[in-house]
Length: 216
Image (cartoon, rainbow, N blue to C red; front, side):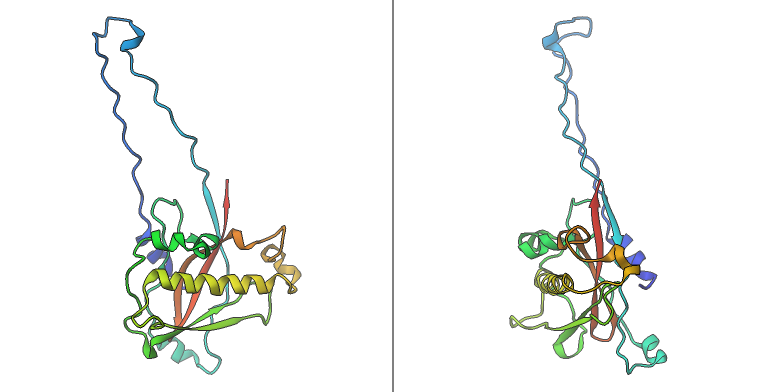
């Protein structure tokens, strides 16, 4: 993708400081050895597992009738990031988005987007490495509920689009040289996929930025 996407992601990441703890002072002088005067040892919870993400190298969609100059000159909107406070990684797991509760808790979930999009609609586009010729687009009405779309409604639409595409790949052939990206039981599953952001590649065309997520 474009190099400025990396800068955008970095600006969205929020590092949360660990909570501070204070140790109560003993009620007696330090020379006394009564166990009751010593502070109780603080219980600590197990350290959370680290999240490792591998970004999916998807094809950037440009309409076939657009020449190189028009592609370069085409203005694009800034990427739209999906973030969950305190999760420790960019994006939101696809399964969590589909369940619905997560999109109501993500950062900026009730903000309006697409103020400068023409015609009040966008086209979502998605492809996957190794699945040649299997590309999918879907038009999204930004005013389907009578007012401009908020981030949580957008996230639901994007997650359904991605999930339907992933399920359609399960019965299709994946080229051998892309075996690591094969979608099937025992390889990549829907539960492994995280939606990181939505990227405007040309005009009203937007592509989900996806990552494969593992914990360790």
